Length: 188
Image 1 (cartoon, rainbow, N blue to C red):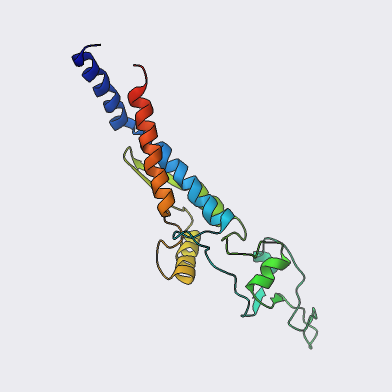
Image 2 (tube, rainbow, N blue to C red; image 1 turned 180 degrees about the horizontal axis):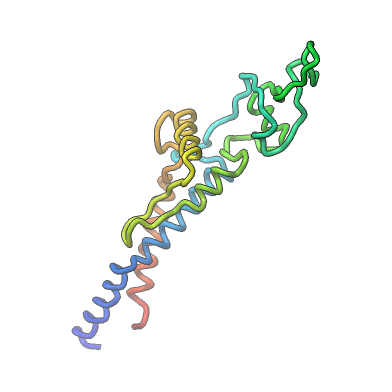
């Protein structure tokens, strides 16, 4: 292969990279999946630690209609009716951690999964803005509010949970480099 042929072949390959940016797409999809797993399965924040612990102090009343798992409506006393005979419309729990335990959710550390709606919305929320730009987003405004609220509550800042960790950023660059290398070293 002559130098001219080599240059022409690599210009075609570079043009292909610039046109559809497959390396960026693969890296973005890979890291988005890793971020979702870290948050919703492992309970990890963007700093590499745990998101947090569930509240064990504040009492909680929950309407069964909004719970992913039904429970009997009972008051703090354990009775299903008030003194006047009217039925309770909510269930009493000692704390949010107690509520999660009673409906069968994990409580060892925060994983932001209660109904699965936020997890599903986030996991499917990687969008291509252009061949050279990808973003993680949620479609449901209520889930955006959940993200903002949890970021503030557990980390005190935006991006404290849903941003990539240092390791995820390194993996992102590694995946891009591997994909570019595959394209450049492939036979034409």
